[in-house]
Figure 1: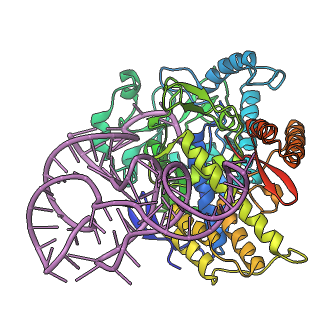
Figure 2: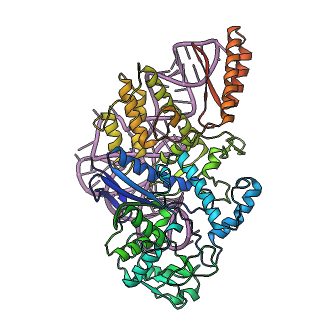
Figure 3: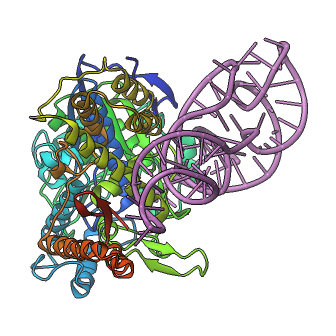
Amino acid sequence: MKIQFYNSLTNQHEEFIPLEPGKVSMYSCGPTVYDFAHIGNFRSFLFGDLLRRFFELTGHDVHHVMNITDVGHMVEGEADKMMEAANRVKVNKKSGRVPEGAIEDPEDPYQIAEYYTQAFLEDARRLGYKVAYEYPHNVPKATHHVEGANGMIGMIQKLLERGHAYVADDGVVYYSVESFPGYGQLSGNSLEKIQSNAGGRVSAENQSRKRHPGDFMLWKPDQNHIMKWDSPWGVGYPGWHIECSVMARSIIGRDVIDIHTGGEDLIFPHHECEIAQSCGATGEDRFANFWIHARFLFVENEKMSKSLGNFYTARDVFDGKVKVTDENTGEQTEMGRSVHPAVLRFELIKSHYRTNMNFTAKGLIDSAQTIDRMVEFRKTLESKIEGDIGEAEVDLSHPVLGEFAEVLADDLNVSGALGVMLPWIKGNHSDPRLSLAVLKKMNSVLSVAPINEGIANAAEEVESESDAAEFEQAQQWANEMDTARKDKDWSTSDAFRDKIHAAGFEVQQTPEGSKIKRKLGV
RNA sequence: GGCGUCGUAGCCAAGUGGCUAAGGCAGCGGAUUGCAAAUCCGCCAUCGCGGGUUCGACUCCCGCCGACGCCUCCA
C-alpha cells in the first residue's frame, strides 16, 4: 500500500517511507495549559490521533509523543500567559467553571498548570485521544525538561558551542538564524523578508541587541519571572520553541523523526525555529521527514473567537452549550442537551484535515445521527451472532477494510473512507461475525462508537448517576405508553412519547414493548 | 506586498482527462404505522466565471472573480 501525505516542508504530496520499516515516530505540539482546551485545539490534536491510529491499522508500531506546554512564556510587552491564567482562574472560580478547591493558590503557576493539564487529559481521553492515555511517559511537560544535559539548558549549551547561538548585551541567549542556512525552508520565509517585516510588536530597543531581526530567544534571564530556573546564563526561563526540540529528541530518542504535526499557525515561527534548533544541535539536515499541519476550524463560518460568542471549549460542547440559531427568528439558544464525546470527535475528524472545516450545530446533529447508525449496526450484528460473540480474524486483505485503509493512505482521506464505510453498513451482512470484526477495525481508527458498548478504544462514554436516573424515568414513561396503547388511548400514549423525546430519548415500538434509547446529542 | 490552500447539489463532503460525478444530512414519492419513530425501496448536481490545450475537461494551462490561512501570541 502506498502511503502519501501532503508535506508542508516541500508543499507537495510525498510517499511516506518510515525511517525504520514498520515503525513510525511522531511528535505533536500539544496544548498550553493556561485554560481549557477549545474545539479548535482538539481538531488539530485529533487529526494527529487519526494519523496515529491509521498507522496502527496498517500494522505500524507507532511512538507518538505530545508535549504539555506548562511554562508561561512572556509575550513582548504583554502579560505572561500563566499570569493571565491566574487572573482568569479567580474569575472562573466565582462563576463555578473552576470548582472551589480545585486550585488552592491561584498565584501558584504550577497549580494552575496542573489543574488545566488534568482537565485537558480528561477531555482528551473522553474524545478518544490515544496518547492522553500514555500520560506521563509520552505526554511530557515542558517544566520537566528544562534542566540537565538532555534538557533545554543542555541543548542551548550545545547550540552555543556549535556557533548557532550567542549571548547578547542584555544577557539574553538568542539563536542566530544566519548560522543555519535552512532557516525559512518550512514557512517559505527568507531572511530578507523577515528583516523587512521586522517591527510590529517587537521593540526597537530589543531588536538592536540582536544580530538579525529574525533571531529568536532561547533563554531569558529574569529574576522576577513567574517560573524560573537556574542556568549558566542566570536565573530565568527558556524560550518557547526550545521545549519541543528537546522533548521530541529525548522522549522519542532520535535526532530525526518521521512526522511532526501541529496546527497550521505553528508553521512560523514555532516549527521553523524547532528545525533550526534541532538541526543546529544534532548536525542533521532535517528534524522531521514529514511536517503535517491541520488547518483552522471555523465555527458557523467565522473564525472562532471569544468576542463573536462562537468560542467553545470541548466541555462547553459536552455540556450542550453550542448555540443553535433559529432559522425563522434568527434567535440563538443553547442546545441544552449534553453531547456525547464520540459525536464531537466525529464532527472534528470527519472532514479532511487540510480544509478549513466549519463547525456548526447542524453538523453536530448530523454527526450524532451517523454515530447512532454505527452503534445500531453493531448491535444488529451482535444480535445476529449465535453463541459467543468472540473475535473474528480480519486483516487488510478484506476487500472493504482494505479499501477503507487504501483511501486513508491517500493523505488521510477520512471523507473518502466514510464513503466506503457507510454504504457497506447499509448492505447485506451474511457473516455478522466477520462484519463485526471489520467494523471494529474501522472503529479502531475512527474511534467513535461508545466504548462500553463493546468497541475498543472508542471515545469514552460517561454515564453518571443522574444519567442513570433519567434513563429509568424515561423507561417508566415508555411502560406507561404501552399501557395506554393496549387501551388504544392514543392521546395519552402520544403525550408520553413527547415527554420521552423532551428528555432526550428516542422511543421505538417493538414486539416486546416500547424501548427507549438515549439520543447521542441534541 | 510575499508565501500557501481552496471554490463540486439546500447543507456537509469525496473523486476522475472519456461508461450512470462517492457518501452523508435535509427534502420528495412509496411500503410499514392508530399517528409517529426506526427500517426498507425509489427520486434528487454537469463540478465559481471566461478563454486555451485535447478526438474529449469538472479534472491540465492562462486570466478573472471570490473565500481563507500564514507572514505577530495563537491548534
